[in-house]
Length: 309
Image (cartoon, rainbow, N blue to C red; front, side):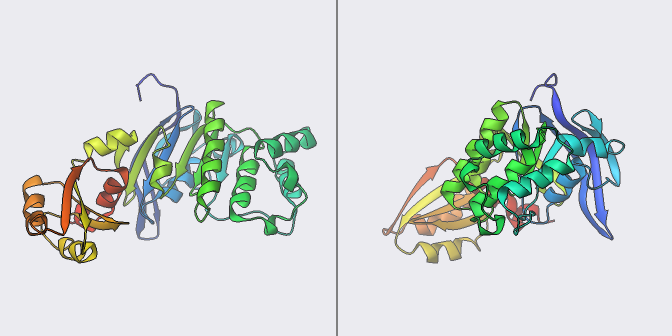
């Protein structure tokens, strides 16, 4: 991101605690307008709390900055009018139809031309044929479409999506992301938290949080390149046995079986190759070095060894 890029989010030193627990610690975050930014991190890393501070639902204990050019402390009500926030859990009335839920949201925002706006967003989300269906009868994927439709009904400039596709099947996830990209192409900025690496790779940029702090940021390719991670992939017999043994071996930061292969990673080549030595001599195993995947890097960042001490 260049310094001259117009920013939808520009915050510095954000902090938030709940009692003695400091959830967000001095977070700096900048997201350019029209960008899809992936928000990654383990559960409890501060992603949801950050999203709620950005949309004005929580007030930071410390820090400052702007969201859509508005002060995150003083202008929270104005920010909420211009942001669409999608929570982790489906939060609409299951005993109302799809159309009734959208009409309720339109009334909350006091939108003019409600029928026309609802018709348009139903068509965009592919929900027109389900407008009279009870929300409680929708599958997970269709519920997420309804939630996204409600988020964009008031034509926000920024979408904050908190794990929007958790528990949704792969086809529905892909269709949901196609819709996100369509919205971004129209100029809407998207900050989306996810645990799916294929989704992270569809983002223009990703940021990774740990313990309420930003650890790494950049495009997926940049994050992988800067990880310093070295990955060997083994195939053959006894992969589970090898994974169990290698995971306890110095020099190995992660050893995980993926289908018919074992991916072993570390940041120190000599130590990693020494750990692999006995297993590379086995005739029933074949090893090749491959570029690390974003999944490898994510596991690396999640590793307790990575943040020990």
